[in-house]
Length: 350
Image (tube, rainbow, N blue to C red; front, top):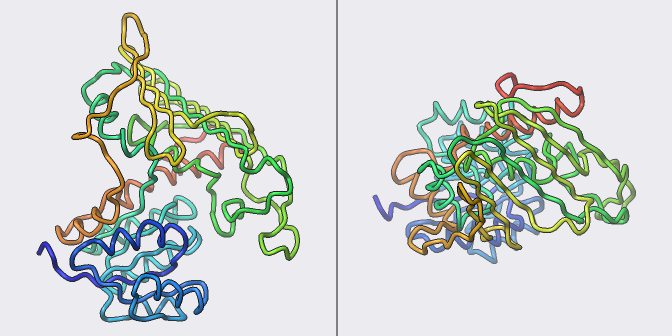
């Protein structure tokens, strides 16, 4: 039914939930905000007041057990995604999980396997990167404009952590973020969806600032996830994959995703905010790059919450699915293993 009532429970109500998900869901007919549990009772009360959520629980289990909750939004850091999502599925609730999917590949596979046998709707939040141009990029690729793919290059250099006095970010803690390194999984998810995933990788990583102050000023903590990583990979057709990512590089310019083929090449440069950007296409024989104008009728955009609700009402998995997201978890873990061991690691073996 188009306007079937769906009661929502929130486990975690941080920045993206308050800025994106809650307002997006609020605008959809039939969605009712039933319950919330946040890191503290006080923060849960603030979220409830802000968005008109009926009940505040001190324990996340209360949200899942609430009989009026049909769907659970897990809005925590990755370290709790699997635990909360699996518990919600076991209780018969649909689950929307904030990205990144899980802590490692095994964690993600456990989620995907549980979802596959549940008969419930599950979905993970996609990154906004390139959403505006994505339908155009994918159409050009499907039309064969690039020919046979020879090289994929991804470049993300930022100065966010270049100052050694910058406090520790939760993404630099293995306890909270698992095997993720900055935007590694985000950029691979986007690149893999547009073009392809490498089948095997080798990698190098570096941590230039070993310790940072804790955000609450209580002391120092070890930086557990690298500041920078470089990845060299092989595509299924023998083409090459190259990625360089750093949070300690000033003046690096905008993040870019490029694909080079025998007949054409695409270069997407992300704007600030990531959803929009500049798309250049060069084709044989002159290879002169020209900007691709995005047709408003084809342009994509943020419709994440609408997609999840529509998937529930249609009785299907949301897009992106947990199963699809396991692919970037395999990539992230393969990069971690390759960087630590010096070995070439096949994604299928992770």
